[in-house]
Image (tube, rainbow, N blue to C red; front, side):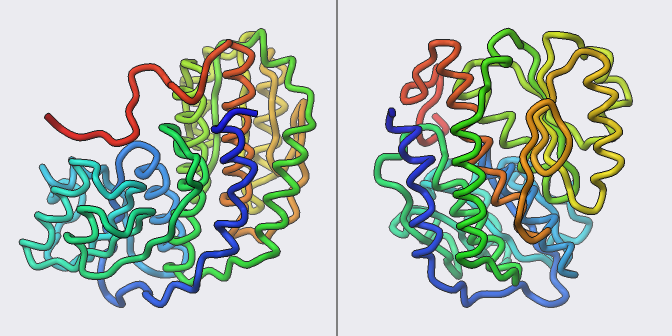
Length: 317
């Protein structure tokens, strides 16, 4: 087991060690959730979860908010910025947080490094250390920051969710994934808060296995992208409990066209029954998607401890 896989399997103790988040959403404010790469995918999920709780929110890539905030929020002055970064040193995010504060906005940092540049550019902080062996690819830190964001949004996520996630990861670890060795077209589908998690599943596979991936909302996949589906395709569906029936109809259609379907929470050639509250299924799915990326990387002979062209912290020249 390499360091990447170890950090995937050993992340749950960090979830349980996370103390209660004392901060809460700001009434009447628009919450601008910023991130870069994995952190942006987490921002997509956190923003959707905030909206589901009645708190206006939108996810924006760090540099987009820095360069053109008005393109995403008509009145940026009436917002609060939630900046998500594992290292707290990503250049785009740090300068976006700095600019937000200089414009009089409150900045709340979510990070795994409480001594970072993000900390000095935040008014409030939600922080927790991550797995010490985590490398370039974000694994434990990703799920941990999603959990911080969920706690901030007011969701109760406790030991029962940890147990469900651990059980699902163990099932994935024991699953026969050999059918994926002949697949070269990988798609991840998820709706609502699960869209950001689907995008993160795709990003993990890109980083780990140097494979081309796509992520869509489930029924959007019929509108053009489905033209690519054939016997080279593997589609992972992150089922949302509210829309499982329509997503299972899509799964049938994709399988009929030759795709191998992995169903997280629903029908598939490889299917996983999920025993978790609706609001926490994205967190439960995340470690499974990380391990899926690792397994496919192993099939392709890729070393996930040294992914091509990537560094642990992206710093602008």
